[in-house]
Image (tube, rainbow, N blue to C red; front, side, top):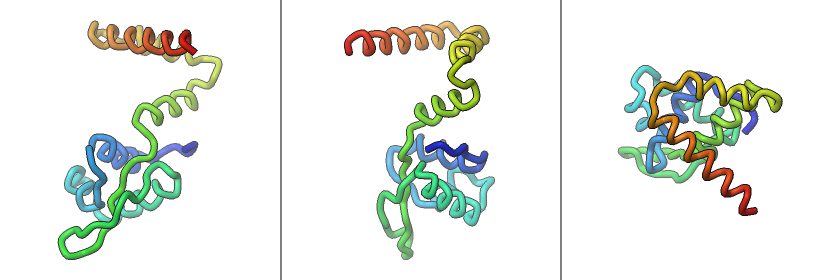
Amino acid sequence: MKKKLSKQQLEIMKILWNSDKPLVASDILKQHNELNINTVQASLRVLVKKEAIEVADIVYSGTVLSRCYRPLISKNEYFAETCRDIAGDDSRSSLISSIINKETDLSELEELRKMIDKRKAEIEGK
């Protein structure tokens, strides 16, 4: 997925990422009541075209058949791709450096270090 998501599309993706099962449009609407059903359905169609989500199944929602959707790209994949787009290949280390320098929570910094150590071990093991 190379195209950026709009604010509404990103809100829908967050709901899908946080769900342990595929959701129908009305379930998404219940979790984000600032949107209307037409906006949700239009955003879902665009997300399918962008290959960010897929129709997981067709189920009954009340008495009506409805599509339920699941993400095809993870939150981490989307974030990494977006950061690469913003920072470019040359300044990734400066982006990471700015995140580290702004972080004030020691547990978050420790989590970052664990991720880096894990990734280093994966690369060295190849």
